[in-house]
Image (cartoon, rainbow, N blue to C red; front, side, top):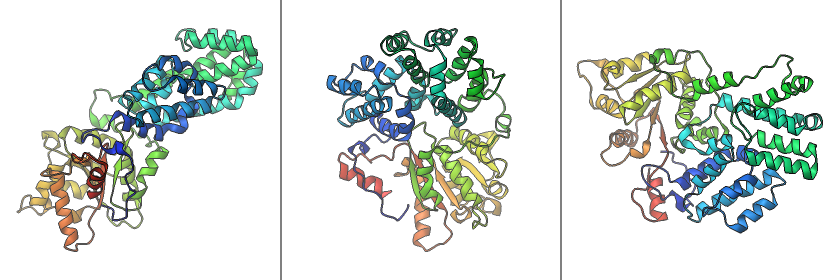
Length: 449
């Protein structure tokens, strides 16, 4: 792996199971990844009465309540308190935070912290960001133009967006501070709602005859709610694909969305040509990062002839990774897959000659490295035939696992002074600690890789 000195491991939370990160680890990762967006979205005040578990003490709640007049400050403090509670060993902090967000209708923020839902597509995320920015920009004019009562009435028409207690709090703000402050309160609540809140707000403005305001916000006289369009886009980009032939599923000519900031950050060592492991929690886009690195690797001006192999440890993952890499790299680069499945069987050597990227099980590559068909030069493969090896779920590189056999070959070639060996990239949600029961042993196990 990379010979540069790694950063010391300082957190005891790395002492986790071999198979998956703990809920505490997930919480730390997700908070770090999405903190800038969460601090803008989370509304702590309605959450306080729902967080009655061990996460927040009475004093914690009082401190958060005292900052609730400044939403970002209160959200920051709440997230700090939850993270501190998890580090102190309190159980269920992530679940309690998620439940409070869901019960108070803050689905956008909840979605960021719920890895089981999968990441929100970046196109949808960017559209929502733009809508939030529009509302923030137009807040003074909105506050001086609309009436909070009638707006709330029409926003809740059909699909109810505002919870009863949120309406009560907005009405309390109106009684104590007037209609203008109540409108500001309403806008602060709206931007925390699920995708579609913007269209509901625009629809309410049109129904209350604020057409000029709609035109100012949207830039159009004939703006129509795009919720159905957004919903369809979200389903096509995030939800599982329909039951149709794979070649149809991956044939649409859509540019791949860009990476998020945290994804670009973890990709940097690999983009610099270093051997490295990318450790991200489940649902945060490790495969997309690997596809991005592959694209840059193959596009490098100094690279004469790049060949990339993506290794997986289960046959079922071949198809999944093929879809992701094919969608990201088309039409610039050719991607194929080889596995033990009858319809994916093929000669690895032929596949390597005719394609830029091969997705295959590790055993397929190991068999080819052992010798393949000695009478067929097309099937003879060496590690030098590749410029980049990607190991999915690389924490399996232990003992007699086929990943370990391949890496043993790599190290043997390296020690023999062979040049032009491929760059190595590992992907995992948990590097594992080899059964270590202490921080030093855990650190030693991780760095040994």
